[in-house]
Image (tube, rainbow, N blue to C red; front, side, top):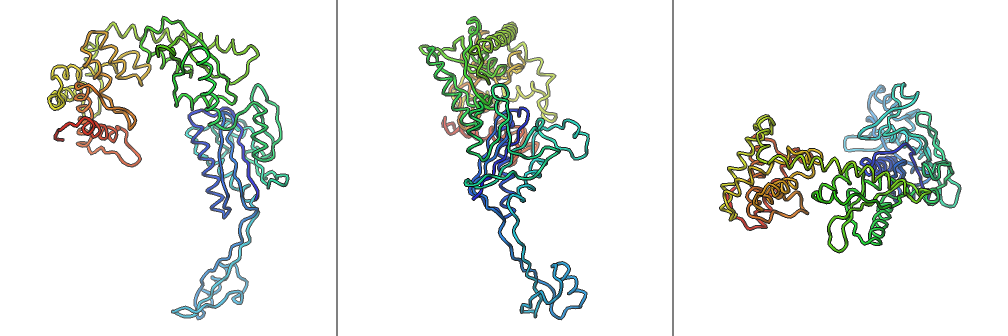
Length: 503
């Protein structure tokens, strides 16, 4: 049976949109095929920074012929009703209909036979419709065509379309359609810099192999495997361990078509900052991995970057450029950190008076007061010191107003712990600044310290109680205040720590 190959070649697709786009392309095309009576054997979508591709195997050559019986009026019905039935059924005369007996009498029935269309013609209608209605989170129009009503909107300018259809044993045909002046064909391009020349493709196997020769790894999962393996090997060869990061790995795989792993370094003086700041700076600003010392497991003054080109100088200029940027970003982060250390956490709390938690629930100061009171009531039930619990509840949110957390929101709580320790707070109080958010999900652990347990329970119970009073409850699709996560957190803490408390 024939196979269908589709490629939509464009400017760079944002990495965060790629996985969803590939799935949307697969689902929309295959759903349309099934809706047209073309049951396929299998389909898989692929995505690189510059292309969306779809391979559909085992598509029938044509739609099945259909036979439909359409029930009409009684044989004794008025002539006007019979003529209306003939027009609706497309029959020339009533003699073309058959008479079928029923409990209520004899009725005319039209037998309508519909011949199946060639699959290539159906695809020529399906693909333009899918492309024109594609659900990009953000899209754009470009060129002269953008001035026309109903012009194509795509995530980035679309340059070419490959669409071929045919069995393995024959030369495939080009699916005949065009979208906004872009005619489907059998020609694509390789890597933007290393193999920009156009080349023809026939079907998926040929397409993927030629792309590989043209320095493009089509499968994003394979790109991830290559990056991870090469990064681990390069780190190991230099005596380091890679700090793995699945989210960053997926993002980088969406930024490169031909991954080339390189190693850079930075001034070890920056390692005097908390390691989370160093990692967040390098990850967020340059999309690079950090490394650990193999012997000590401490953060190393090295990083792994992934280039999209095999440079003639072996990547020296690329590494040097990344080192310059990372040095500047780490210097900025150090300035933020040093600035934060000059102000004690409790001195920041007054600013919460001007920050509204929710228009019906008051300010952040009022919320902190509620959490402190509730945490103090819970302290005896978890075996925690009441004064430490009060202090922890009072300081737990203070790091939200720091420079570092303003730059890296994901470090909330973590920085609270470091700042609390730096100003001489009790270790249990400092731990609670970080752990009161836990657990953040099913794979996150619950707090371990008794002070942390009291503050964590109080923070989550207050959140649930307040929004339940307002009748703001999570639905199947919406949970803007993370109430479901808070409820599950309360349940996990109580069960895992065997806490007896009346809720």
